[in-house]
Amino acid sequence: MCKDLELQISALRKSRWVNLSGLVDCATKRLSKPICQSIQLLGKGSYNTVYKLVFADSTEIAASVSAHDDEDFNPQAKLSEIATMQFVRTSGLYPGITVPQVHAWDITFSNPAGAPYVLMDVVHGRKLDNITNDEKTLRGLDGMSNVQQLAVTKALAKLQSTLSAPVPFDKIGSITLNDEGGFIVGPLFTITQNNLGGPYQSLIDLWRAQLEREISHALREWSRLETEQLSRSLSEPKCTPQKFSELFQLLSSLIPHFVPPSPYLPLVLYHPDLALRNIFFDPIDDTKIVGLIDWGGAQILPLMLTAKFPDDLNSTGEDPCERPGIPDEGWKAVPHDWTSFGDTSKWPNVFRGPNDQVDLTIRASAMIKRYYLRQHFGVCFAQDHHDRYGDYNLGRAMLFAHAPYYLKFHEAITGGWTSLVDHAEWIRETYWRLNAVKQDGRSAALIVGPNVYRTSMEKSVFDLNIFETQFSEDVQDGEEEEDMGE
Image (tube, rainbow, N blue to C red; front, side):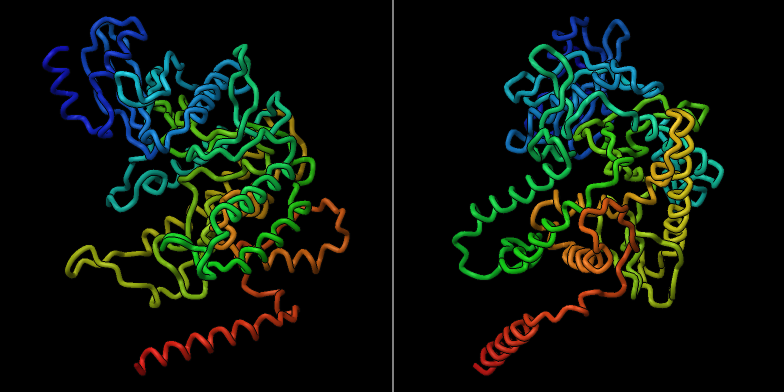
């Protein structure tokens, strides 16, 4: 290995267990290449670090190295990611979507690189995630002009429409290869490499399996509790066994009602990290996408559950600040709608330094723009779906308007017991509202509703537990007063 290459390696960021000299040796031997002349960092994410290797024959290879250690890495999830990339490249279902060709991989930690790696082609194109406005206050889609925002949003919608082609599978899960090298659907993997089991024949099977996993967790972890609190760390929400049981029963009862109507059930491929950081555009044409990367956690799901906006269009109630009277329910799959400032005099004061106050309205204005760009995205998706597939279904034409409640339900039931607690109010209120309006339990009517509940149907229920709660609080207050008296 030449000294220049050794110097380059010594200057690169890497996980402590990764051997970049070993990675170069693996790539050289596996791909039968001449000497490697250079190595540089292409990108670093939460799950992988990618390096570009350039060989003496001018070949460029992207080497993606897992950022997980051997305790957190899931080899089957990585194999599913590779199989998905191969499926997208070879199936013929996704014209215009360029995915890098995978040449070789190793999913062990015992190879000379010291970590799992994938060797693939380098994708060339323009990245738009680092564009800034003239004042350098906004970045990415937010930093673009209105005209460019519209063009890029339309391109993203067409990309998602292309991915929404019906697939030749009949199960919910993630793509993998069988022993003969054919594509099949295997267990359902998340972007964090969590295995949700499966494959599943239906959404009901998937959701019931997730609730069973939570009961298995309870039997394993909560059978020897010394207190009535299930949480074991500050990162976990406070919850008693009784509250968990209530939410568990409520979610279970809602499962049959949240199976979407048939127009939304075709199985399609879902990319869980659709964002400008993973998309390459034509160098001179912002309407043309030339590459899509980072397929980890890709899934085969009913169309309704894939109707999530690209990350660049999402917004939360805490960015740039919380507003009094406008709660943020904290969903990952459904954005919080910023549509106005409200009373800015009640906003917090944020400073970069002494006498350097941050103008939060700049960021807030960008969030409001995202709201309208989401409407544009939904319309462009429907138009492309009609043009591409000849789809005249009015329900699917409103897919992104109709999906939020189904996305919320799916997130609540697949996110573990902490997700049940985090969204307790939504679960309860949704149950009581459906109980009030859905008299025919067999009806497959579409479920829509407000982004944030501002009133409660629970007031019509006589919950006698309130006296137990008050008694418990009084006892606790009495104990605290005794402690203070001592």
